[in-house]
Image 1 (spheres, rainbow, N blue to C red):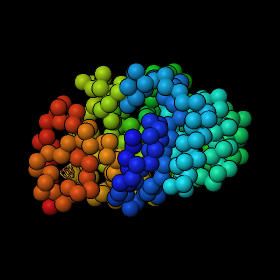
Image 2: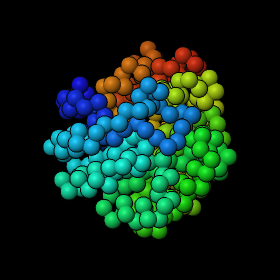
Image 3: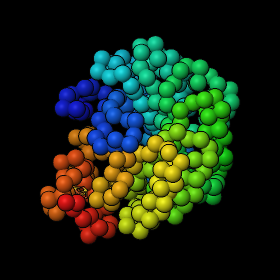
Image 4: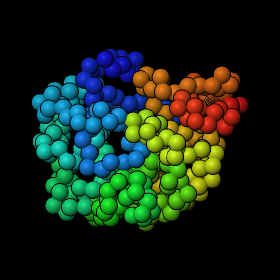
Length: 305
Ligand code: SF4
């Protein structure tokens, strides 16, 4: 049973809700999330979906039941996966969800938006936000991380198609050891493409990432100068920003962009160090990822007073 916002909402394993705290610099607050299956046409080296879940594919009618139920509680819903756009019933689910009055965000690896016909069709359903993943400033970096040659070109042309159609695009970049030095270049590219809201998320050490954790997880303090440069560029160009999975103690001066998820299921993967008890963010901070502490220890985490 998923518990969130202090209430049991549904026993569907793919449906949950989010409530973001902090992040005054962002437009995201709370809503429902539905994962419409974990099948994907990428094979990202930092994917947080465990291998044994990859083939989970909930049936259409079951998903509709859940979406309808979630509508009793929320006005907004995020469709996520796996990759949502490759489901055969994708348009049917979007149509159903719009008809019952949800505002929709689609979280996607962005590749399908490179097809103009697909892009025109989904835009006509009135989806409010398109979340698209971009993990590199060029194909060498992005395609290596997604394990799909050509995925970078597809995402970039997908973003261009969406912007040409006047859509609100939210980008998502997962920060790994392989791409962190390019964060300023990635920010530059996203700004040039006209992306409306830019999200940088530190890699979640779970699923496939756990298998690759010895080389894919960057030490936060080594990565930070590059992230700051990227954030400063976004701020200069007045972009909305979101920072995820990085505690406040690393984000001095950028706290307003940090969002923390109030999800009780996170508690096992997050540990607050004893020193966190004296930090002014103790109550709202999710704390370090426990696997990060196993890799690098806790010396980098310094309480804020
Ligand atoms: S010291 Fe602990 S509670 Fe404070 S911001 Fe860092 S991780 Fe969060």
